[in-house]
Length: 119
Image (cartoon, rainbow, N blue to C red; front, side):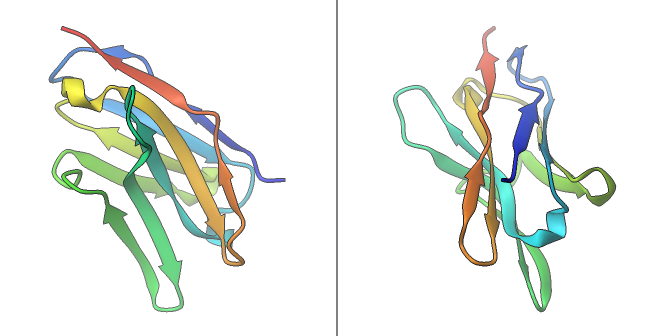
């Protein structure tokens, strides 16, 4: 069973930067996709960013309106995927979930890490 453990969520003020970590219990290259989703209060879960691997390589995909302030990166040695949020806005307040999908479509979710934004 794959485990995804998120950390880094905390109260922040608008304009701050924040990094969320997701550590997987297995090598990142065993997953076809790995990344972050978020669910703001009262709204549906949405894609923030993910890495998609194929035979031709890996590419990073960002959700709508996420490309300019969000950066997805990974550290293969520690099986960790990072999400950096720059210039946080109140709209970024949400529960952030780490997600991974294997090549045979099995997928896994972390428990979530909460980001709250207040001035």
